[in-house]
Amino acid sequence: MKVLVARTDRLGDLVLSLPVFEDIKNRRPSWQVHALVAPGSVPLVENDPHIDAVWTWTGSETEAESAALTKRLRQEGFDAVVILQYRKELALLCRNAGIPRRYGPLSKSSSWFLLNRGSWQSRSRGRRHEMEHNLLLSRRLTDGWTFRAPTGDYPEPRLYLTDGQRDLGRKFRREEAPGAATVVYVHPGSGGSALDWEPERFAAVANTLARQEGWKVFVTGSAADKATVAAVAEHLEPGVGVLLDRFPLREFMGILAAGDLFIGPSTGPLHMAAALGLATVGLFPPVVTMAPDRWGPRGNLSRALVPEVGCPARRICLQEKCILYNCMSRIIDGEVVDASLEVVRVRQSVVPEE
Image (cartoon, rainbow, N blue to C red; front, top):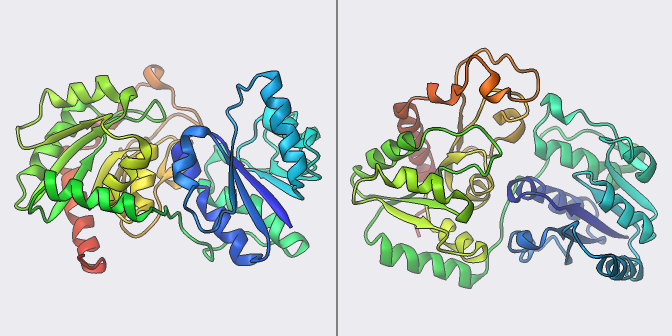
């Protein structure tokens, strides 16, 4: 059996899809499992031992490029595809490639015609975590008529690094945080995936933690976060480092793995940090489509902070139209600091020092 698993959107979405690959291999060890991801996400899956091959798709291929990819997929001879996030163009590609069994969420009208093994999922209601939604789709493939919804017997997201990536992280920590017992990354940008906490609040948390004995704090961000990081940097004390778009993703994963604590909004690096074993503190809006019940990082080393308000939105955040906007300001700096100290203590009690 040869299976293609597709997740072609953001980094965090892919991280929360990683358990699907391990779960399929655990339940069907003889199967070949290939991943189809966005080109920029390849570093997240290229070393995963549960993935036999990696394909890429952008959704913006030319007609000739799409035809070539369709031909290659057809030649590969896949028996099934699991499309974890439905996109019409992707489903068409898989159908045209002759993949006979096509699984995925029945979320759009076209999905009812293009997915012949589709499943109805009400993801926007937030009743399950995103990771569980993904596993529900893949287990319909692995378990067939004996399918049962996952009830905790599933793997958690985990990222796999090369020795070179880990060596790079150790070198970074040795040279830029010499003697630090605790290395912290504060990531203020969300890339538009969630409501933002104020930059000066992130700076206040970074400064407070940097004053802890043996702690070194870095503010991180990609090029898309330039304005946000600059706003945070205006309020930083000299001891806090700034890593703005300094490392490409593959190298950043190694740098991230060398840390102890990650603080940030609902964004890809938060999920990456949790999947690398860091303690995490995530700041989440209360609306169900953005809340931690749906999008929170996994594991016992993660804490999610949500403003205590009666959110008037049913599914989609009302943004400036909401009488409570911006409710994220109700998360107090001290809450983030206290959660950070607590989760680091927990991590120190369970993770042995290198």
